[in-house]
Length: 116
Length: 115
Image 1: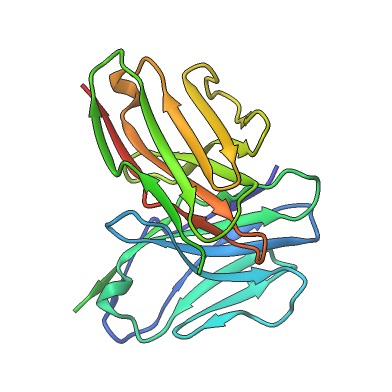
Image 2: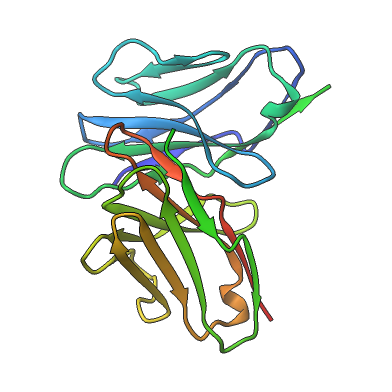
């Protein structure tokens, strides 16, 4: 079974600075997707970024980028120029693409606080 | 982008009654929808996978008779919490995948309080 581990329960960063959230996963699959979701106090889950495992190039979305290390099974999220609105829970998630069973496996989350 | 609408956002019900939560994909067809439960300060726990026109697939430990799921059309799935008890109080979230891309869109969630 796939597992996703987020080793940082809480993190904080000063506004405008850069922060990196860690995520590791365990799988024997070769084809899969990885995601970072953001859950602000409103509790709406928002997709931040996704990465296809077959792509070597790291995904980027504006201030958000990932460092995808497939061999190490690591998928960290870097937030540049942090903003107060980035304060939220961040969940790393895994989805395999084979076997017919389609579901997201979530990590336990990292609570990020951006301080003014 | 893909939008999933979930209603109600909050509901309070008396113990022993049933509550229905709706999840609709507004601008895409979703053959598969997912229902999660989230306890305070915890991650999302998948309860079941809802398949259009067929029975839902429940995760281990989830009571099928308590959490009834119906996926009657390509845009609507419902979760009914039957004979609710205070321990069923939680935050329930649905999601669906637009098959045009790999990614899940989530509803805004339903906070259920059973008194």
